[in-house]
Image (cartoon, rainbow, N blue to C red; front, side):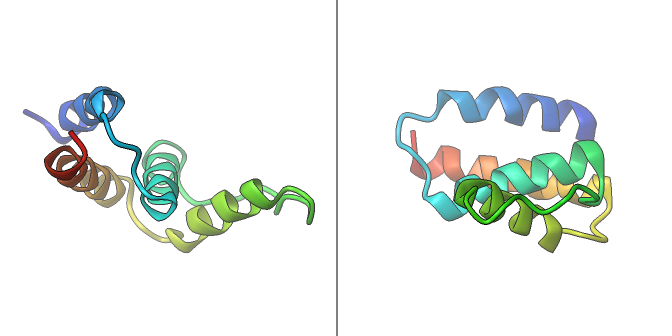
Amino acid sequence: MSLTQQFTQAQEDVKTLTKRPSDEQLLNLYALYKQATEGDNTTSKPGMFDIKGQFKWKMWKEKEGMSKDAAMQAYVDLVNGLLQTHK
């Protein structure tokens, strides 16, 4: 299975989790997904009243420079780990 196929499968698999991942894990999933699909974060930082948006923006910004393939693989690895512990 190619990395792209694994990434697509991981996106489906993550929806089958029966326990909610931690906030940190959810932010990592978001950031890795965005890095894999859009590349580096070039968006404006959210306003100071958008706390959730700021956390998401910051986590994605921390992935800057990571290749799309590396982000896809990290996403797949994270989902596979969550499937072990959150099913």
